[in-house]
Length: 214
Image 1 (cartoon, rainbow, N blue to C red):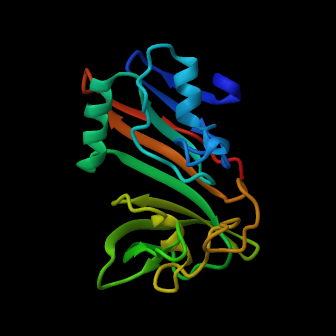
Image 2: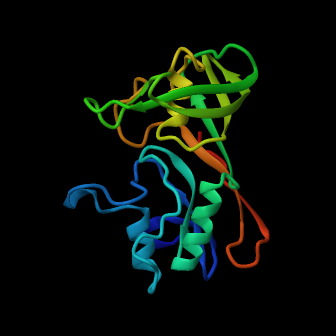
């Protein structure tokens, strides 16, 4: 279903919306007049009565895939609590620039913001916050590796850093402008493919999926 300004609506509920965010589009407004076009603003414009800040979670600008937005304050509170309590299932698929060693495992790395190079994150086992990601190889494609990521924590740039750092997989995501060799917005090959959460009113388990376009 095509919705506001070409944004694909995966599911529309009176309490929330699931969208398929394209890479290169902000999830929420940034700083400055030229950074106001985003998923949240498009949803607000499309659904009269939607709350001012509907985003329940965020995807990096260059990450594509499933994103959840609430239409009411109560739904936002309930859904946000699920994310805070790690009761939401999230799965991503990425194409990595290199041949990953091994076939599956768990990455545990602590990292923090580099204040002199925002928004870049740096590995810091002393002062960083721990991030945990499960991963498995889906395919090997001519010097690149297709990997499934299941983040167990929700740190900023977690999957990007876990992929690129030598203590992680040692292979950056193709098109990553911060940790790899990407040069343009929207070319990073990281896609949020599955989102599992409980309906904010009924408690029913909901599962949404989106196939990557790479």
